Length: 496
Image 1 (cartoon, rainbow, N blue to C red):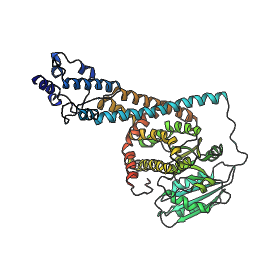
Image 2: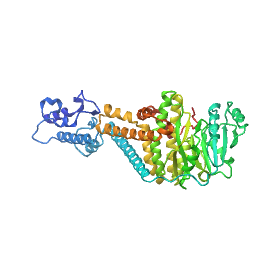
Image 3: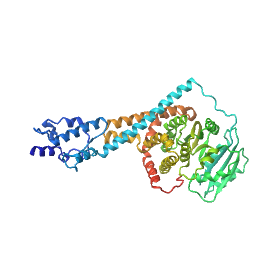
Image 4: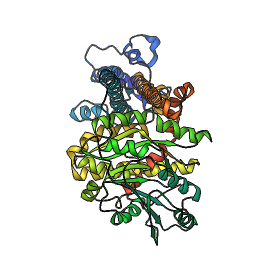
């Protein structure tokens, strides 16, 4: 009995004040070598009869080795469980994994899954590039260009930015008929008067001004207010933000991408934040938009599963809008409408040649509010699509998880956690591989857009650095946005 008592005391965690209460990060093989007196408390009490405590201790050591090879930290025994044999002890011992072990295991699995998606995207881009070299794609010029209705909603937009948007629409090189509907969502500044003065001059396209007495609180409601005013001949509805300037050939390229397949319900172009040399915040957003996200969206386009149509410049078939409805019921109307169309079996196109320059948030708080709104829209769109068709939503789930990993578990924080907090070689290796694959996609995306955006070698080197920083910087905004949707908070424009 005295020997059994000594064995229990030698194993009890309270006997090791120099060890952590939760996790021992030392190599598990060190715990197995426990016969020498120099090992201190890890000595083995020799007994002629099998000691139940000794058997349990060896079982814990074997589990520790298994978890170590799986990339997990060694779990500590539960000090609140009585040290006696029995089925209850066996069950509690099996469930006594520390929460750090479980969280590390989940993180490694999620990051590993997103890493596989990034690797698949990189392989797809390589294969697609080889295929294009072997076979030149046919020209996408249409025999007849459809009638395009452009919607420009605005609310207290600065006069200068809105007029620049209208000038870019006026200079657009589109061979088909175009109408422009301006929707004033209850603005209280002098922008409406400036727009009226601009419309008083002779223009090459047909413009119509729609004024709402009160602000609806959501951009989708302003867009829905313009749907009854569409021309009966309208084939395509284009949404352009009031702070966005489109390139002269952007509208034509986007329409050609939309009509490349009869299953395409919508299309979007490449959104580029303007003024990247103004501040570090502008550079962060610039490299984010032209980096790996553009490459991933290109892969999604070839698979017909682009899950985000940027609301700054997006095109929709008028017939599909009349079938599925407008945008008024959602906070982030562009994401939710896209997922709704995908859930109904439609596909989404992406036109990287259709470039639109938009004004990005100029303050950190403005960027925080924007990304908080976007994160809420991600969860909102997932719930909308799941209610329509869970089977089609499951096909889009990998892309949603890829966003969730980058938004809630940024690679930079994972590298720090793997090196300092968990001390896990598995998590560290998977996070490093994830970053390398993302850097490769950043490189491919910048290389593809270098001529159109006049990018150089410095941009190739900085794009991965800035993308790593902005992912970690926006973690609180993404987390709060998801919590807003879960608790059902008030929905509003949350503009800059």
